[in-house]
Amino acid sequence: SGYHKVLEENRKLYNQVQDLKGNIRVYCRVRPFLPGQGSPSTVGSIDEGNITIVTPSKSGKEGRKTFSFNKVFGPSATQDEVFLDTQPLIRSVLDGYNVCIFAYGQTGSGKTYTMSGPKNMTEQTQGVNYRALGDLFKFAEQRRGAFIYDIAVQMIEIYNEQVRDLLVTDEIRNNSQNGLNVPDASLVRVASTMDVMELMNVGQKNRAVGATALNDRSSRSHSCLTVHVQGRDLTSGTILRGCMHLVDLAGSERVDKSEVTGERLKEAQHINKSLSALGDVIASLAQKNAHVPYRNSKLTQLLQDSLGGQAKTLMFVHISPESDAVGETISTLKFAERVSTVELGAARLNK
Ligand code: ADP
Image (cartoon, rainbow, N blue to C red):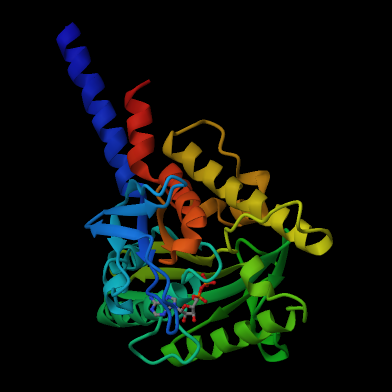
């Protein structure tokens, strides 16, 4: 039955690879050129899930490198299109799944645009965060009569390995219950898109208060909107609990250690540490290692329940199109490839 053993082994490998594909998705998004920018583009071509980056070389000859992801959104992709491909994942929270969505990339590459939206937001330019909650309310409403849902949110910021609650106002403090992952962070029930808008404003104001005059702190901290969903099946009485983290990560740019000192160096070291800890956790989950190094950073500790197991993870990897950003763009895409399923799947098959 050597033959059957081989068949069985093949089936196992196939299932493992399928699992990886199902659990970790990577979408790449290219920011359009901003008004007034005229530098040539570093993006050679985009074809479904493939993106080719053109790298200049000293001899004047161009290099080309292609990266593959689950999907690549070009510069003209709308917020609507981006959300449409995220919607099924978000809805699975109502069925009791834990979901994690990250925005990764260098400062200025469009992370906040994807997750929240631009400064002067219209309905068309609303980001994933608003759309996600709006969609959960809508879907919960459609299931009315069969399920009762309770939806509550937390907003926190991680800066230099310190966690800060972004939803503290006196009024909210009085009405809040205890959070799950961050026992001290306010957990606030929301029932409408209006509630969410108000909370986001509170969060954004609190975030700005922490910013020093010297540097824009928001690009050097991770911000996380967590949505807790509890649903009761009215027929069976079963309770389903799901949770979704929407994370706008700190800018991934490498800083030249010889050029920064003091606070700035400390920030850079903390960011480096937490982003690589995140990469390590995702890689070790994908390889189904017995030990997953969650405790190496605040970020991975917070997300522990929502990474791995039955959790679903999506990483939006952002790149800037300018050719002067090509160095960061390549290292961003390499990081993304490291967390992406395809490469890990191949590594496993070679074992
Ligand atoms: P990050 O959060 O990565 O630092 P931002 O989201 O702040 O970057 O984006 C930088 C600038 O580019 C902002 O002015 C933003 O509105 C704009 N921008 C980013 N992505 C897009 C996009 N897809 N379409 C139009 N403008 C965008």
